Length: 227
Image (cartoon, rainbow, N blue to C red; front, side, top):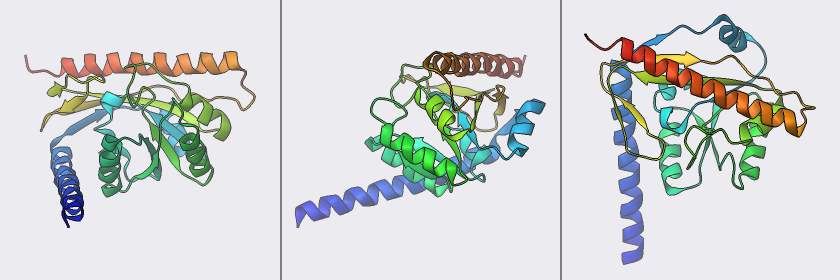
């Protein structure tokens, strides 16, 4: 029957694309040379019993997979068709996926993420995703931190050789054999009793930290360009 045949063909193409992209990414990651010097406060956060919420810009997510896929993470991914494809790739790397948005009606997804954090997961999300505005932190991450006691850990990267796509998020694609610079901000805690004013202040703190370390990562990666 034609409808069934078309549906089967679509599923086959998607599964094949996921498999190919997974292996392309694995090969790319093998060639990249990381450069990172996490400050002592970040090392302490990883060694503490408190769960972490990694936050990174939507356009700077690609290199996070090989850095953290061995940790017990759940990542917030949109419910769009692009999100479905991304979810399958993430799951191939062993990352748990929570479907939904960090804002704009994503209450159920954030509640699911809160439950997973309370059951021992770390979390990761792109606070300016899934559609922007770019480099603007939405309130969802701060709400999750307040409800779980998890520390928010800003992280970003830049690359010595890269392509920046003409997308809303200026997606950064590191090129093979590039040196990749990772930068961290200090962990940010949100008290359970935080007032709306303090929540807004914490949101701005996360946003300012991410913007600062992104500028720093770009500067450091440029310094490694051949003269």
